[in-house]
Image (cartoon, rainbow, N blue to C red; front, side, top):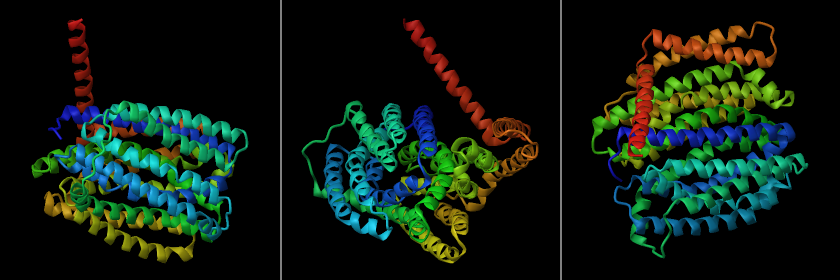
Length: 492
């Protein structure tokens, strides 16, 4: 992996944000239309199926993908070896899920889950190929290609899902939409990414990558189980419709945070990995990432929590109103993501996947303990348990970087506190607008406008470091594009 410059990072971040924002924006619109056409229990059934497919996908897509990005001298032998290994693992897992499907359907007393699980599990094969394509893209900072593949697939698959839902196919509309999406992403990248597997397989290379990747794979498996265990418990103890409300409540903040924070971390990991021998530089990049992402995400989560009720009424209709309290709770949980992900990315980029695994084990034990305590009090308290676990986990995730980077949790909270306080004040101002009796549409428009203006003005007034940095960075990007156009015009 060659040296990564600020220009490389900003360009990659731009295309990653475009890919995340564009595809998830369209996906969001598609999900709104599907939610208006379908029932909450249809979404609940897909959530239950997705849990098992996601768990299987961890073995196919996690660990080795990151190991290929992290390894400085990864070559054709490494990529081809992991490609064929992933396909073998995907085949084994598909066979297991195929024969387990009737048992899973019986467990949840939802017999149609059998065929749904068997068909959607085909996405494991697409995922096994796509993980290698993503590794190639990340190593070469070619996120522009990912943007076009994701955008094209989400548009086509969205149209297919909406047409099927309108034709009263119910849960199968969601199946068709997801299956088509995964297939098209992989197919488009197959033609746009030049890499092709060769008939090469090295056990030695597989073992070498496995020594790094297995810890991440186990960590991801633990994290996935912890994330989805609540959906399984809710589906078993209550009903698919409650699962639907719970998952939709999580979807809104997840969409915003994964778009912004996920884009930054996808770009930051290869950038951090390229600087892993320069600890002071890594600390500087980690701090900048935490401060910047927090400045953007905190006001989004506070604002979303405030406008939750009129937003759900407007977009999903009244039948989805039970989603509101879950949405507000998850806003608090996802606001903490910048601290989690940046610290963990730094640990991985430094090659310490052993520490990463230990942290995941500790956090999941804590999470299971809190889950056990909250279960008797109902689904809402179970959701609050996620927030409590997330807050305590910020201290756990940050602790190793006190030693690795000399960047303590106290410093991190000090860095993000101005953005947090400013966001809370903004939230109070935006909430007061709700007291005026206006239509839902007008209320939301005014709240969003006032919230953005209030937050930006105060950030400029108090001269927040992250705000100044973002303004200067934006000017640099615009200036760079302007200079590029001038050069191109002179050449012509």
